[in-house]
Length: 102
Image 1: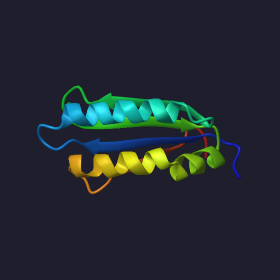
Image 2: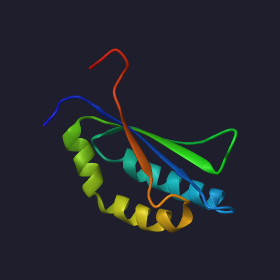
Image 3: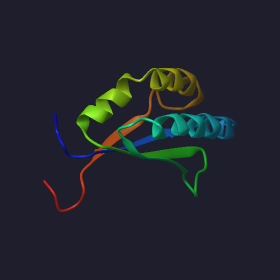
Image 4: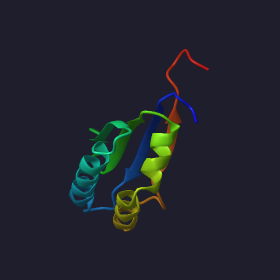
């Protein structure tokens, strides 16, 4: 198990006319994730220049906390509701490392 934080961004695009519905789903899910003991940050953003595009910024205490997040039933339910409402086949995840660190 790694003691380093896990930092992730997730991006997805709402289907035409569904951005507000996707926003509501994401905000509800955010409240659930923020209650997870290993989550330190879960913020949902919409791109100013294209409000159908979303970016979620997530930080977990460590790898174990992130893996627990992935196993949580709330995530499975959220993704089942989100996937038919977005353009991509699934959210696009990027794992991030603070600049200046290897």
